[in-house]
Image 1: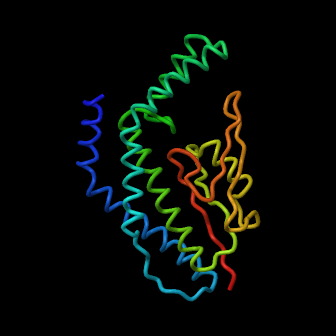
Image 2: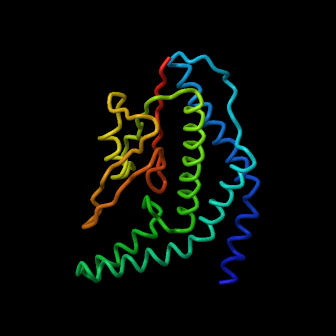
Image 3: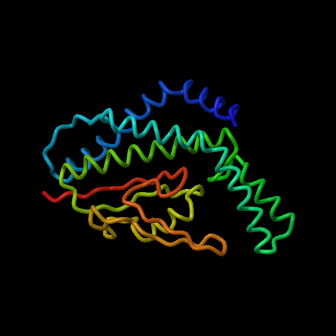
Length: 214
């Protein structure tokens, strides 16, 4: 266990300067995105983007560090889950083996292969920071409603398919302080999305579009 902690500590230390720069960059992009939306709706406001406070930066760093150090634990849990579900659902050994293979595939949206995981982790937290900043600025500028813009390609997940169907157009907007809520059937299970903004799942690329009353 000590070796694993040391391994992840080295990764964090190595990439910390880049992580800090990315946090500030995504935060600025998020606030600037809402500024542009507000200006497009006729709101008069400065075009200067916000930067994260020291407290916000520390929270983001803590969450990212916890996610990196916890990847080994999550990987083990996921493997156990696949095996247990295979037994419960009376899946063949071949099907269970394929499910495990998919878990470590670089092409999987929930991949636990080391390289793919770091890429997906970075994308997920980039979206989280951008979205939090965008919401904060939108509320400051008087946003009243919101809807979701998803990326319509073969990589779009079943979660964002459901989000897009329910909230993917301007005429499907909801009040700004409500959550986007969908139910998605995954195999024999029903999973729920209940969030104010993206990411709606691991490696999500969707963004929230805010509307303003002038």
